[in-house]
Each structure stands twice: as C-alpha cells, then as structure tokens.
Amino acid sequence: MGLDFFRDNTFLVHVVASTSSVSVATSLTHPLDSLKTLLQIAAGPSQQFSLSQVVDRVQKVSGLSGLYSGLGWSIVGNLLGLGGRFGTYEILTAYYKDGRKSSHVYIHEALLAGLTAVVMPKSSTLVSKLLPGYTPNVNSWNYTIGLLSTLPTNINTTHGDMLGALKQCPWLLTGSGRPPLASEVREPSKIVSLEGWNALWKGLRPAITQKCVYGGFFFSTWQFLYLAMLDWNSRDMNPPPRSIDEIDPVSPLASSLAAGFSGALAAAASHSFDTAKTRSQSIVIPKYIAMERKLLRWEAPGNWLERVAGMSPADRNIMFRGLWPRVLCCGISSFVFVGSYLLTVDYLL
Image (tube, rainbow, N blue to C red; front, side, top):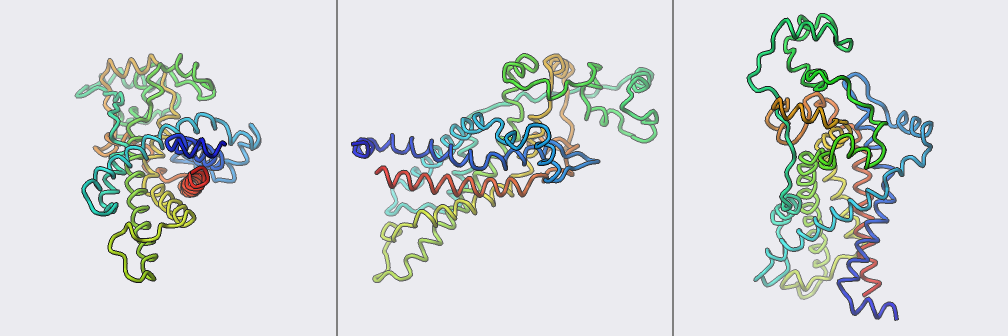
C-alpha cells in the first residue's frame, strides 16, 4: 500500500529521496567538515595547528561529540543549497536539450549550468569602504600607536605602510577597542543582538564564488565521466547505438563513484574561496564597528581579486588549510548523496 502511494506521486518520491540522502550524507561527513572549519580558523601567519592537535583540543573541551555541533543547521543549509543547485542545473540542461534528438548534454554546457546554478539567485553583500584619500594627522597617529600595546613601538620604522597594517585590525583603526571573543556568541539570538541581522549574510561574496567554482567543476567533471562510462557500455553493443538514448544506463554504483570523484576535485579547486568564507564568518564584528565602517567609508584591503572574492590579504599563506579533510568530506558526501538518492528512487518507484 505504501509503495503504491509513492508510485503514484513521483514528485513526492524525489522529495523524500533527496531529503533523506542529504540528511544521511551530511550526518556522515559532518565531523570532517567540523575539523576542516577548525583547521581554517586556527591557522595564522605564525602558527598553524595540525589535525591531531585540533582533535586533541576538541576532545579536551567538548569531547568528540563536539564535532557534531551545528549538525542541524548544516542539514537545513545543505537541503536548501543542493535543492536550488540541482534544480537550477536540471532546468538549464533541459533548456539545452530542447529540440535535440538525444538527451545529450555537452561538457561545456554542464560547466555553464553548474556555474549559473549558484549565480542565479541575485544576492548582494554589504561591502564596507574605508577612508578613501584620507591622510591621517601624524601626531595623532603616533599618540594612538603609543597607546596600543599590541603593536610594537617602532612600527613607524619597521612597517612602512602603517595605514595598511592597521586596516588588518579595523577595531584598532576606529578606536573602538578590542573585538569580543567568539565564545561570547554561541546562539543565533546573541549573534543577531551583537552583530545585527547582517551577520547572517556574512561571508556571502566568497561563498558565492566558492559555490560557482565548485558547481562548475563538479557538474562538468561528472558529465565527462558519465559520457565516458556510456561510451564504455556501448562498445559491446551490436549493432552500434544510433544515439545516446539507446545505450544501457550507468549503474548507480558507477554514477556514485563518478560523483564522489567529481566532488573531491571540485572541493580542491574551490578550497581557497571556502577558507575565505569560513574565516570571514568566524570574525565577530559588533554593530557599532560596522556602523563606523559605513560612516568612514572603509575600503576593503587587498588586490582586485581579493576584494571581489571577499578574501583577506592577511590570509594569503593559509588559504589551503584544511584542504584534505574538505576533499575527503566532499568526496564521501557526493558519493553517499548520489548513491542513496538513486537507490531510494529506484526502490520507491
């Protein structure tokens, strides 16, 4: 009775299959994602923690169960993100295939659809601008620097670009004191009360860039492997198939393996942007500092690419921290997601 109900509701079958697949894949790989995030946040120009050190600290502070912190939010975020990404991808590829004799999608079309699957939602991020053309008073700057215990007293001689150095520490430049500790904002309500609703969109620009690169590499690589497997299946067919639709379909296991490899490759290609997103999200910016940035027209430091992608020039040497945990996480997640989705759809239908 239950299977007959699902067979009569194809859309519901895909909803159930996608929801369960995302939940299983996210739950399985969430500890790896947590380790990746901790490695990215703990990295600094003078000290970089190893994977064993991060695991040891997590075990001392919260136990290994702390690696599952935020699992519910990750599942909800992946449900919305993967739903929009695959939905937009299917719509675009259906447009490409419209009017063709076969359901063939070229690799460059898969690449473009993967990129557009993230860019389609028109999102905007608040980019702060700082002091264009402003020349600080030398006496005032020297007096201020003398009060800052975190900076060396000979900064004028050791660092030629004093304004550029202070831009790395905006709370020092604005005179607002030190930023609060991240441990003070553990709940969504406290985050909103401290940083405002804009905090929920923090790191949006590097996140969009990362998803674009990831989606383009993932779908184009997956399509390339899918066509290669179809070509392999057609070698023993007699007579040879006239179109791609006459070739035997790829097995769920082979498709899952291709998705896992594609996810790992896409993760490696987009990891630097993921690091920029994670580090920008981990920085606590109270509302009064954000207001000062807006009033002072704060210009984000860095070159053109860093400003567009939302990267910090101070993080140039640590952009690939946590690479292998993320590659492993995305590879396993893609394999489990595609495999469980195909098996669930095949069972219910």
